[in-house]
View 1 (tube, rainbow, N blue to C red):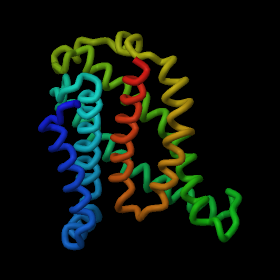
View 2 (view 1 turned 90 degrees about the vertical axis):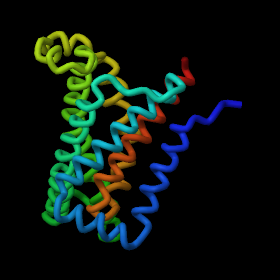
View 3 (view 1 turned 90 degrees about the horizontal axis):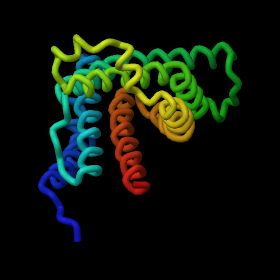
Length: 222
């Protein structure tokens, strides 16, 4: 029987606490207020904390123990920056798709309008924006890995070295070719069916879920 580590208990408690804060009326109202008044700050914190934690969980699955990631502060800042971008991008594609439907530039039936708006938004966002975001994230991760998380080393690394370090074949064939159509488009369709105040949070949780699932898949194959 595998031993349950203290960190595993804390991880479960973390997600349980997050669920409680969203279910409890008073704390949920605080979240909604902060999210509406400071969307970019909340976007930075939500994605920065959850996505970074997801990477730590993936490392736990692979190595069997929790480790401080190389360049952890930089990974957190990168994820946080992406969280800020997500706030704008989700609104951009959500509002843009709505306009396309209103102008009859996308096909739909009245009884399927809500679902198709979410679906179209997910498809457009994942085909237009997601590849750029994913490639950028691969590049930032490569900088952090190659520099061993030290800023003075990052400044010395040439872009060509970073690009050669990335497995672009896997990126295109698997990340773009499989995770986008089979995970992200369906998952973000559900996300865009939710109220806008929860979309970035759910997207961050989905990134954690996908990271864990892919890590389990790799470990099973190994």
